[in-house]
Length: 295
Picture 1 (cartoon, rainbow, N blue to C red):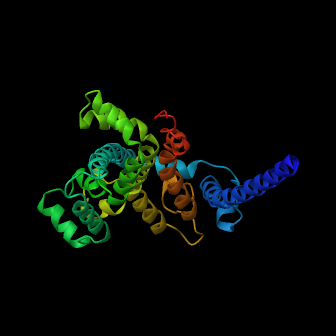
Picture 2: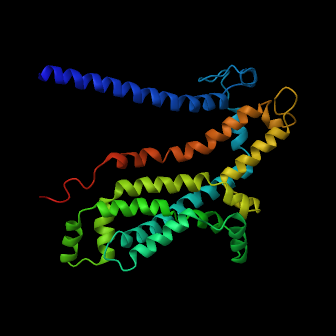
Picture 3: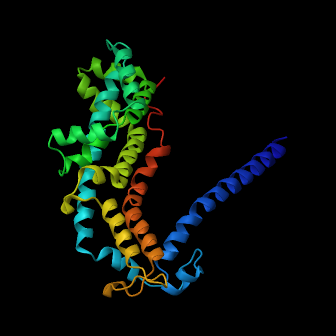
């Protein structure tokens, strides 16, 4: 009987691993295709011969994207916006979610209704622009931070996680004389690292990939974020494509193709944020509250 049970478990495990591996490969192939085109020579790209491995390997396309003086400026802007914006967003999210997770909070349902209403309905693009202009925030770095500085959805995710934490831990902290803020920052937050890491990643990716805020509120070239710079670079490359599909009249382009430039911009804009994933991945599966309360 035990042998048969082990056999069933092993078959299920094999099927499960096979299906998950299949989905992983399906997800990975488009990424490999884009990376291969970014590092392939002009001939194979134009002929459509590039699949999942670079042909006629070259780095001129990446150099073309990186060497422009605007790149470093826009990279610094996006880096600053991502770091500062994520820090502000996490502070606001945690400080709002924690009191809303307490049933004894007066007016709790009213506040939740307001937040849900804000999540479902917003003023729109034009009123938001008029508001930012009236506050003299256009062409400032804060115009790239404030639009994403708070997410009701992320706040509700954190609130629900706070509600799932054992009350006995907080009660023990209060008995020891801890204030509400001390309980939050010394007890609740260390126990909530999985959800906080996940929400931090959501905010960081959102700030890094933010494009519309730059289009709406920024006209100063020195304040353009990386995504806006890459979009302008693609347009510049496409405007100079000759009849063969190569980039013409640009000395440093070395007959690169518009398709390879598009692929290179995707690689350049994706790699920095991908480096954040390994440092946060361990928190996604770690049950940090296990054993925090002894029965």
